[in-house]
Amino acid sequence: MNKLPGMITHIQQSGAIILVDISVDGHGFSAILIDSGTSNQCLGVGAPVNLIFKETEVSLARNLSGSLSTRNRLQCTVTGINRGELLSLVSLQFGQHSIASSVTTRAVDSLQLHVGDNVEALIKATEVSLMYT
Image (tube, rainbow, N blue to C red):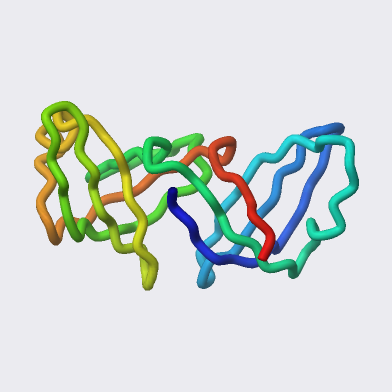
């Protein structure tokens, strides 16, 4: 499980859907939450949180251009590749933080990934959870 420390910078709600913007070292992230109907006093601008997202929810791209609906785009450096027969775990450095992506080994080969390569990690806002610190 990937975990990044951040701070809530903006909250927008429509019905039970909540869009939360979070800053991690000055980089903006978004998370979509569903209001469970119970008031959570921890959800407020300025509150420290951890962003949580699975390795399987991190897509990788090289030389990506154009517009994209994915809200969370991170410039990363590949720091390791643990190749499996079908799946590979790609270790990434995002600023001072380490994260990981689990992708097919075919994708690693197709992207021609090597340690030291620059890639863009992509995480949909619906796949980011918040954990209060």
